Amino acid sequence: MSEFDRVVRDRRSIRLFHPDKAVPRSAVVEALELARRAPSNSNTQPWHLILAEGAARERLVTALLDASRTREPSIPPLHDDLNRFKYELGEQLYGSLGITRDDFEARRTAIRLNYRFYDAPLAGVVCMPRGLHHVDSLGVGMYLQTLILGLTTRGLGTCVQMLIAGFPDVVREALLIPDEYDILCGLAIGYAVEDFPANNLDVPRKSIDDTVVFLDR
Ligand SMILES: Cc1cc2nc3c(=O)[nH]c(=O)nc-3n(C[C@H](O)[C@H](O)[C@H](O)COP(=O)(O)O)c2cc1C
Image 1 (tube, rainbow, N blue to C red):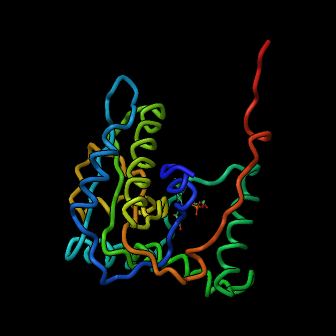
Image 2 (image 1 turned 45 degrees about the horizontal axis):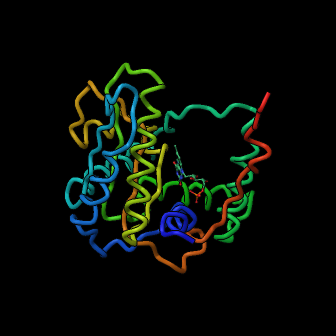
């Protein structure tokens, strides 16, 4: 198996990090160097990333936790046809933690770990200039995946977090993000707690047959 294949296969969402294991800036910069090679619409490179650590991260986490105590995050609803994926993921994720379907309190507590970036010492916020088209967000997605794989091959774990974007006003204020950027998602970066069950999920994927059509006429 090539190193690339291994990294793609090894990557998975990490939902508990070692809070005190610092992320080397050099590894992050190397991965950022790779990510900026990502393709984008007319080479517009519409990505903008804020990486918060130390006091900045604390400020963000405190603000998100405060907000989540008083209101729900504003997140786009899933299309009806897609709800079963969320349900199945929840079963697998919470099941690995011994949380039953009807234990709403435990599920809420687990979801709230998002706002602590799952204890990752480096908290990323992925942005894009306001008012761009969804075509442009494809470029940001390509940037993000390249960054994530670059971090994975350097031994770092990650989790993309749309829930963080559910409180855009809070994130904006805590990290002084100018109004001209939309906030797309969070990105937790750090070293995984290897034996945490939810860090070792093998989340199923649709088959190639279900998702690709080869046409030759
Ligand atoms: C755009 C996007 C948003 C996501 N938002 C969250 C999130 O808010 N919280 C979370 O724990 N995981 C989040 N994830 C992780 C997905 O649940 C995960 O990628 C998916 O279940 C596949 O699992 P894997 O990453 O371990 O392969 C997100 C992933 C993507 C790409």
